[in-house]
Image 1: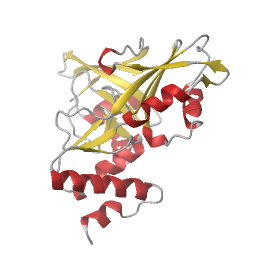
Image 2: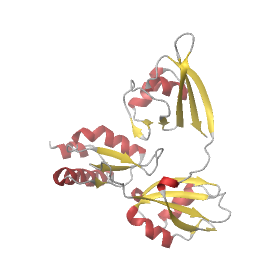
Image 3: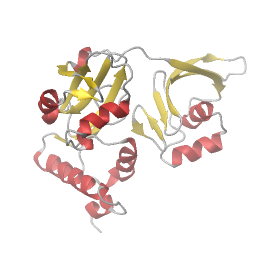
Image 4: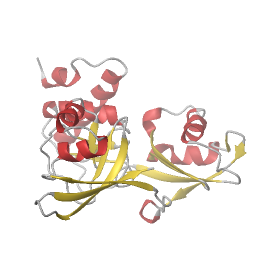
Length: 254
C-alpha cells in the first residue's frame, strides 16, 4: 500500500477528498521546494492529520489560524517564514450585541462559501472578526451586508494589530506532581489521571491548537489547553508547595 493510500485509509467522504487534496499539495511542495497551503481544518480534522502525518512526504508541516489561540487552522507545507494566505475581516454595525457565532457563520454560509475557507470567528458585543482564506476576503467585503436582522459593514483588518476583546476566565487552582499533560487535563476535568489519559488517547485534547496524544508531554507556562466538550484554559505554572508539588492555575475561558 502506498503512503498516499495509508494517509487516506479509513476516511469517509468528504474527508477523503479534503485529505487527498492536502496530500497532493504536500507532494507539490516537496517536489518544487516552495510553500503550499491547505484550507482551514476543524480540530477533529487536525487530529486526523496529526495521526496520519507520518505518511506525508518529507516536508515541514506547520499550522496557523491567524492568531495564536485559533482553533481552526490552515496547514502549510515548507512555509518557513512565508505569510499564510489568511485575511482578517472586521464586521461592525449597530446593535450587534445579541448576535451569536451561529448568526455570523450562518450569514457567511449564506453567501455560498465553503466552510473550509472560513477559520475562527471571534464575536464581541461590537461585532466580530472573521479569519478567512485570502482569496475570498474581497468577496465577503462586497457581498456581506447583514447578519440576521442587522445591517453590517465589513472591512479588512491588520492581523498584527487586532484586539479581540477582553477575555473572561474562571480560575481552576490546584497542585500537580509534575507539569505533564495528563496531570493538567485531570485538574481541568476534575477527574483522575486515568480518565485524563483516556481523553488524550481519544484525540479530544489540544495544546496551543494542535492535537496531542502524548500523556507525558511537558506543559509550559502560558500554554493553552483545549479539551473537546470541556472548553479551553490558559495554563499558569507557579512555584512549589512544601511537599514539592507544582502550583497550577488554569484560567478557563468563560
